[in-house]
Image (cartoon, rainbow, N blue to C red; front, side, top):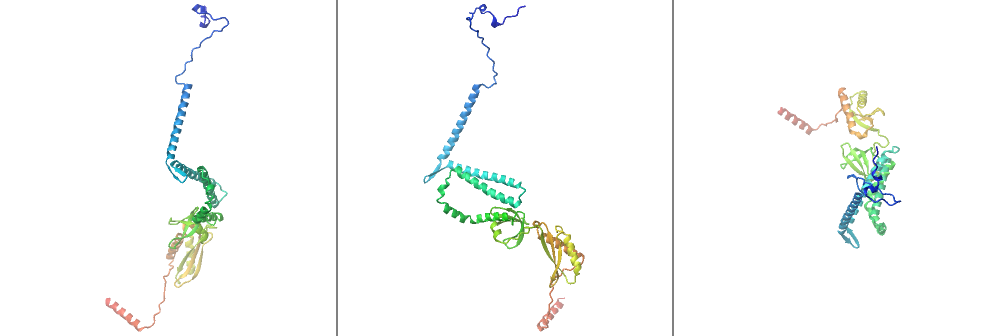
Length: 363
């Protein structure tokens, strides 16, 4: 059985074709490779690149037209021309500077909050200084981006600085006062200080925040006072928790002269020990202060550890407990008493008789 001869090995003469010249290699034409219709072609890639380039070019031309249009609206001051585009650039730079300063200030706050080697005052001081440095750096960057030549302002720097010095004297004074307060730790967030309102009434408030210009003090009735930092440097301030949070509270009590002094003292100690928030150590103390016109005067002295929770309310709690104990043991709290001596007087005697007669008639 004879195998079929491949087509390319058959005699070309048999097909009526002219044989190749001797010495030449016959060429064989291969069938074209079919191409999938979904496969990207080089021509398609070049067309896409051209389209993208044209789109970018058109977009650039559009932006350029917008910039040119904005730049065409403007006005001139002497030799300086101010256009809508330049104003827009200034606004964008200012917004960028503000955003930059705020972001880095928050990052500095989070970084300092993780430093446990420093106390609250030192961390707050570092935060304020870093905030000032970040804002100064951001402003310098903005000036550089706007291309402002500071050397041109050298002529006006003296007068400008003098005007700024007078105008911002209080502001810089409060800023320096706040930094000094944080450095010497005389005032720090969380401290309880005495606060006097506009009517002259003294109260107590807790420092919530120390700002660049003022401190925020919140009282027990949720009233928030903003006190300039400089006032705390000049005026006398009572800090109830400066070196220790232990605060001693006094509560005066008076009893009648017929009372048992030993029993009264025991009841006063019992009242103060049964009141919440009162510390056992240092122990409370009951003192006999003197003999008044109508009463024997005692003074209860006790300690608390949370002055921010209020002083008047704990004093009220102690006195309420004293009242109930005195009621249970029949201890009298006297009214003010006065002895009135009347001399013999004819007119006074007539007045008494007239009053007596009128009372009899009405009866």
